[in-house]
Image (cartoon, rainbow, N blue to C red; front, side):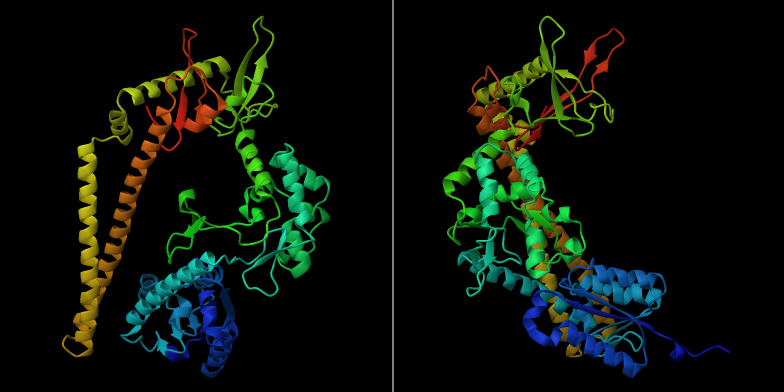
Length: 540
């Protein structure tokens, strides 16, 4: 006998989410409060709970949350056919994705969704206000993001340090919030690293010394003191406690914290919806001086920075150091190693792919003589120097691959399109709000309201995407022009160079890629060498 629909057994997932911003609202949205509400609701409704899925510290605008994804995997596997949250915002704060799940995915997968506090249940039919609730939740997330950034900016300006952990050598001040104080138990580690550096040791050498002397790492110290990073250190072998990396040492050597300053805004989120971190240009960093007591003198710190900048060019053989750090294999990306052929009457230097050596043969030779490379690079720099001296403006046009007139026309067109898109977006937002007022007042039918709201929401998404694309295009074009002018100014200062130096190469060139040579039937040898210049990349 066929069972009626209301006898369906609901294998229920209780989903709980809390972002860092939500913590400001206290116990009303805490994980414990959500758990109590959801468990009580499940008992009262006779739902079969198959598990709890908790994302603590995750924004609702991000749907790549680990336990959210685990829950959706269980939906796909047929283990879950009912999802319960405290309210809609716990499930998510991005209205387009919310519409996708509620209007498309859940009906397709026959999944029941319940928002307890708002009495929304897909089995009973969602209210007409759900799209507006989702839109409001997204607006709330955006407004919260803006307020948090403003608050952080004010704290940064006041010299406060915001972070989960204090850098090695410091502790969080026990009495003054967001203040660092020197940690007398660990400052010696920082002093040791800088002392080794100022006496000529590089990051790799310092790392080996720290490991050999079993100096504890910052992570291990935090684990010993506070139990943090237990997933890494609990039960780990002893060598894990002093497993320093070159990256850690380099980070300490470059950190202005140790001369008493704090640098903010090195990285930022792409947007309040996309939390992926991107590195900001150094020109946009904000430096606040004297935020804590210094461990290292500024003189020592500056000396170490100069050594870091020059070390990549220092080689024992004075004829080869100028290309160090610049010359790479075009196929595998590894640095080319330097060697000397001393069997001939006239010894000469050469480069070869370091991944080809030591019998591994993981890449081909990519052999090129030092004198051939030297002559080619010098000739290209002489060529570009002549171009700069002869006609700076013409070279700028060439680098930008367009005439001034074409560039101006393109920029004017993009700016006009951006203004039109922004104006239409504002109009759609106004129409959307007015349409809601008309529906609430009974001036339009619910059918027309639903039809138009879908149309306007789609247009809002398209316009937002178009605005972002145009803004990015205009910004990229401006940056390209600025970078080209920077390189030309650098090149102009090098009037007809007659020899190559490490300083000249590292000022003008980012990298040099050497391809494998091609031998012709007549025994001739052709080889491509690509030069990528700073700011502008490869140019022909």
